[in-house]
Length: 316
Image (cartoon, rainbow, N blue to C red):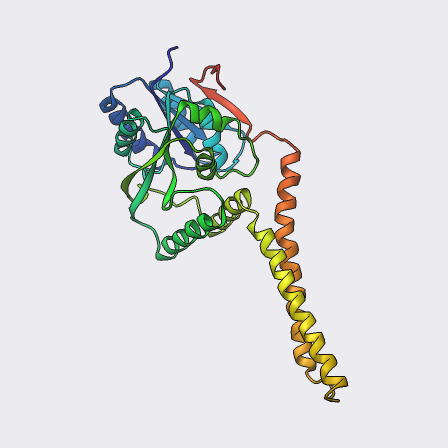
């Protein structure tokens, strides 16, 4: 089968309410696109009827392809699987909740034809998001950008187009804790942005509650920065200097001023503070050591349960 010009990769997790409308919009978009295309759905262990609806879509349209996981492996690994199985000369990663408008892909394709290897969507406005999520996301991306040695575009998600050579290079990065947008930025190549307004979800609930957002933020920072470890060292030096100063003051007060050292409460508070700092730094070390432990096991990033309309790709 000839290689398609464009592949759309859509991770799916419990989106049965969205899939009928998603299918309708994708079919209309592919018709307007007027180039050889495919859509790679990755079912990330959905517990609703998502997989069943996707199988029906694949049976009725050969351009739709399905990779189904044996369980839920997470959004970033679902993106990885889609990229692994995508055959297009250009590959676009987008969410299945219709918050990434298919029409923006046309602008991305134009930029790709101009010679860009990566074209990412930069959000001007986000509908349906809480004030807390908007603020915390803005803070995270700016803190993240300040902590890592590479340039990561602000206010962007995983919605992006990648050329074939970027895709093939990305496939070689098999680290366990995935932060795909950071990996693509790390690869380099010629990158640019297209601006768009991100609508709210068509239906259903967000798949990134606060707990997953925090976990995702930790994965992103620890995957690309050792600054937390350096901060632990700097903090240790600062506390050591402060402790030496406190000890010198205590000796001076006892042997020069002949004053009894007062402040049992202050001493207890100081000991508790030092203990809490030590535990915090041990926790930071534990995060990095835990990642080393998970990397050395070299387990596969995902397990495929079944595939529909998927053929072997010589590049995979």
